[in-house]
Length: 474
Image (cartoon, rainbow, N blue to C red; front, top):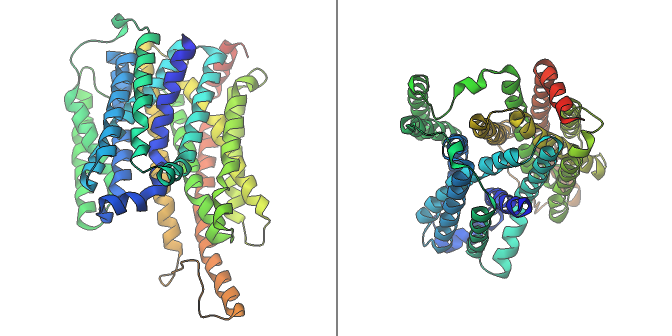
């Protein structure tokens, strides 16, 4: 029965991860069909904001209503959003449908991780979290390729219609396989005011980085107003939507900081490494896409090996190795020049992937270890939230640094026409230099963040992690 349940939970996590990236490669096809290209970016932004906001709400719902109800609610919302996306006749409807999908994805991912924490203990929990981490990472990276394949061989709407039978299968398996005591759920008045204020404050905060001009100013003002009201509401509520007392443990706060560092490094690498290969090092387009393969393989190998490594090493040592791998990978890219061999970029990608793979399952196991049933959902949701926020803000800040490093006159579509061969080589070298200067700034920042993660690990988590290892019998 546990195998059936794990299958359903895995399918839910895979679907949610795919939807983050699956439409990236089919944007021109969707825009050509629905029109209004100036609005298309909101299809991704809306999904990201909705998913991030409901990640925290998922934790509270898991602890109050139970894991099963929360997970099923997320799956159903995701399925309804998928159907609406498939039938969308214009861009505004498509964007609203993507937001509904994001709400479902935000509920089901923390819920599935919490259920795994309930069902499994010790080393088995780490192994299962490793499987989920590997599946999530592979799905997010494979999303663009899958999107291109489906859109080319069928039609882009099938990217969403294909979710429906999988959603029905997940609902059926979960309803049968997950037996949860209803009495375990916490009852009482739900903090609807806190939920609405949190949705408003987080949405406004994320919009600050996605907008400009007058809209950005309004977003900043709304962030301050909603944030202040949320803080006062959380302090006054008897059972707040987000229990700030759970952040009182110093080691937990540092674990969340490490999760944010991991999210930033991972998503910046996924976003920028193909760009580095194509525009910075002169790879062919096909080769540039393959640069993420070592990152994927590194993450999978590391996540699968975590459970076995715990028999010989402490979880603290494994997490240190993960952060060190990220740091070395970041430094390699930050120092890279066009004269370096191609293998250097593949090595850097692999090291960053190893770091991600070592950290993801152990961070989840750490926050769930020893937690009360009524707190486990919220603690897990906080972890997912900080990982997502770290990734989103990391990419936004990296894009800002990269753009700032380019000269105002920079414009390159990859072609040099009307130039002699010698002039073409000179111009190409100049453009490569501009790109790599920006890349160096981005990955030095990532390296600095990795050092922050190492500092958090060494300063605040030693005793608790050694205790965690001992109680597992490692």
